[in-house]
Structures are given as structure tokens and as C-alpha cells.
Length: 158
Image (cartoon, rainbow, N blue to C red; front, side, top):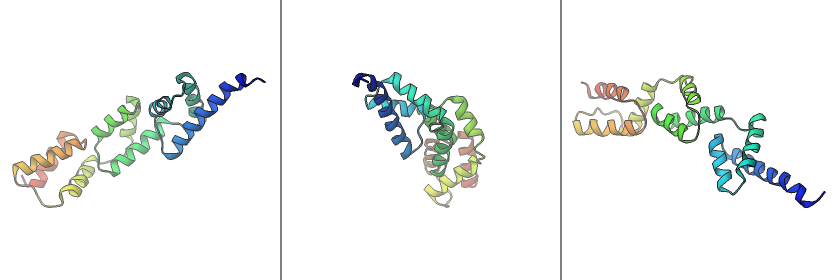
């Protein structure tokens, strides 16, 4: 066998090794992994073949990535709107995002209250400027306006 005949096999092995190393650190979406491998100079056609093989072997899964990402961001106090946008930016399909958020079994009102309590403590906000500040924080965290208003109304004693 000539050295040229082994080059494609060696290139595929190099792509797979790089992909598995990245996956060993944390889950990645297919889109993220493809981008990272491309940034490292790997051929896009070969990368797609390797990623297909990793999916078949269940080493790469957008479903698993979305579920783990959701759990991590929820623990950090982020809301559904922000998580949805972040998953979309990472190349996760909208249908998968919707299904993942739907099966989260999460009370977003409780998550919002936890995030607000962590940031602002338990003292009520009576000043309109303070209410607006809290509202902006919660909105940046990705909670729906309707939940934010309900929480601020309750917490201000209105």
C-alpha cells in the first residue's frame, strides 16, 4: 500500500480523534462541532462523514446536547427565551428546542423567583426605578414579560 492510499484514512482518523476529544470535555451540538473542526482546518466533506458516523455510534447527539444545555442554563438562572435563543445559535433545530423546553418539567415562575431572589434578596422593591431595574435584569435573563410583570407586582405588594 502506498502512503497516498492511507492519507484519507489518516485524515478521517485525525478528524474523529479531534471530535472525540472535544466531546470528552463536554457535549456539543453537531453545528458547534462542525464549526470547531472546520476552524482547525479539517476538510468539511470529511468532517461531515465523521460526524455522521459519530451520530450513528451515539457519540454525538443534538438531543442529548440540548437536554444538558437546558439543565445547565436553568441551574444558572436563565429563562426559556434566552435558552431558546442560545440553543438556536448553537445550531439546534427549532423543533428539537421546542420539544426539549416542553419536556423540561420546569415551573418558570419558580425559576424566575429564584433568579430574582439570588440577585436582589428578599426585600421588596417599592421604588419604580428599582422595579424597572429588576425587570430589565429578568428580561435579560430570558424570562417572558408576562412572568416578570406578575412577579414584580407580587414582590412590590401592588
